[in-house]
Image (tube, rainbow, N blue to C red):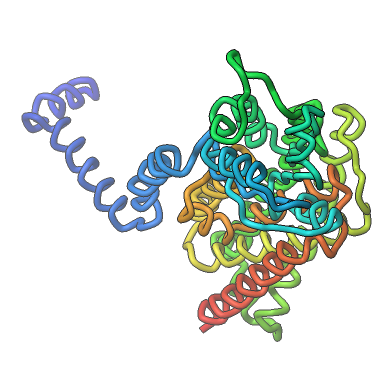
Length: 387
């Protein structure tokens, strides 16, 4: 019998529906393997749920209840009516009352408030005399989306609030001048807001991926056994893997900032040394988190998936893409636990506001605490891996 006859005979004897049975067996095998891969299964379920929740509830492109400070140099009925009218617009939420211009400026520079309202001494008397005094509204315009809508709502104040206090005529006449001052980004240029935030966003993505693959790469290449046989401690392994990427991250940050300054005209009003130190702290924090991920997962694919699950809420809840102050309280609490949130505030404050260390204490301490926590978890997890 020839070879051709043998092939034809085997094809003729092939079981009925053999193709579909084999395909079905492979289908079942893949589902079983997917079920055992917990990280991938969690990605399938959690990623769409997370996206729907964040975009549906947390993201708001017209933020309201923005934190506002007030500097009242006189206590008058008219002043209280104006403040009440501003609060009724739902854009302003008065959280601090200050007594000096220095404190007023410090709150704006540190980012603790987004707006400041100053009612000067003798304001009501000047209004009743027809002198049209000025009411100062200062806005932190580093995020033009957050400040633009609120500043636009100042115009109808006379019509809505002062009818009970003054006769303003029909049509209404402005009895005073609202002098809106958009600080730090008066032209509302988006690049001044985006480029500093991109420093933290790009560093978060690259640093997480670099270190999340570090331990899993050792396991998949079979070099972990050699590493474990060496007289080296878990802390020493972690620092040995993190420090090279600190240098890489610093080079990346310098490149992004340099391009931002040279090509996009983004200013740097603050200290370069302070910016470098706090950028290094942020890089180390992300590397520690990525290293923790590498001790949790079993392969490089899972490491990439876990990194992306962490990166998604970071970019959405940090204030980089959407105004942080406009998010609901629960989303702000989550955002405060993300390193990118604090670094976005730091880099914008240093580059656009010229902020000093005393203005950035809270965010610096938060970054340091997140770094220490991630390092502790990473060392603990790696010690279990050794065992």
